[in-house]
Length: 585
Figure 1 (cartoon, rainbow, N blue to C red):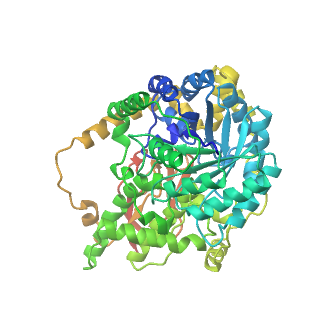
Figure 2: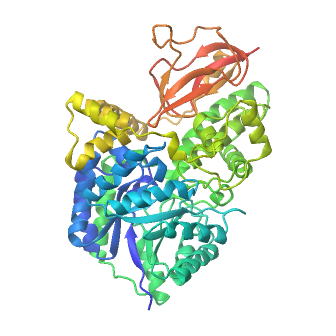
């Protein structure tokens, strides 16, 4: 009788639902109850964006990680984290010395297993982390991002697993981040790996968004999987993961050996989790993430993106309909625009080399598709605006794309005088720890136990500075206050797009990121807003958005003149909002 063990993805449950994760005091409350449930051999405690999120609401992530891991360490339950290989715990690449330090810090904080993935499935970005993790005493779980295309076949994944195991991976994870891996294919992948390497532990992680995940779990169990990632209500299903009760019952009936669930503890964990939602976390959970949708099957976007995607769509929707109304054309409903976006993602994905649609590359593909839809509606060419991060992906600076770029994308790069990169992505990012060590000494900041504060500063520089200054907490309190007001607002009247009415002959420039607006610098390096009527050339930088992960440059889509500025210097802008209006020449 084959034994299947469960891992509770408590971190990912929250991040697939909304923006924030529980505070340290809340994690301290839920940990002993999770242990009392008696059915989990592993718990996902941290990683991904969760530690950055701690900083964003003014909490020290190192204290949160130690608080959450200790009860599980004491109970003999393994803890695991998610890391993004070359990108570490952030959206952009990390120097090698900072990556190496991460595993030493996380092992010291009580994290047993690191789940290492590359959003492009480039093993060159995973293998160094395997070595760093093992040297630090962690279990290196090398991860394959599952998606569905002509390129991403059973043979593709089996070959990738062979490279990872040969490089020293202790375990293999199938990360089905969008839940679009077909059950039969997943079963074949697991069976092939287990046949060749029966001693290698395999774990399956699948979101429920498009509806395949329960069937997928049964198939991989039959094929020999060892661990399944599960969730629990009230954050199961929807865009999250299947509930442990359902999976346990299914496997038990199929003849597998599975642990029993202490239902009294389950209900208490359920109650506590709901109390965290009621406290403040629920104000940042999009209701749409509670539902499954088969629309995700075609486009392959991860369910966890639906909240941000709908927010982006809302911002662009008003601008598109304003244009259509002015052109005496039929306006689009949100559903029509959503279908157009999904179709565009499906169309451009192979042209962009089939990057697995996982953070951050899912965001890049979605951003390009969203801009394409906006320009196509206006009768303008596809690819009129591609942001810098997306270009870095296309040019190979983050790793090798699985597929082949379409000739029109290659021609567009050549037109813009952009060079393709074929070397090791890590070579683009030299070591930086010495710089951070020197600054912490100068500022009198403690490097922390096991250098954990040094690590956080180097990994999340901007967010750590804001945390130390208190700005992060102040900003979060304002954000929470605004979210509460919005939640309880009684008005349902939708105001017309007054901005577009002010500039009937102009078109909007839309932000492709959320952050603070930085306008051009004068000769004293003082940021100034452009004057009304200023001439601007196509592709010229209009302004820059300071995001959580770096700078995004916003270019002009045409030759023209600036007739309206909608965002002031230093003002926070959300992705999809209008920055300015340009009147074409």
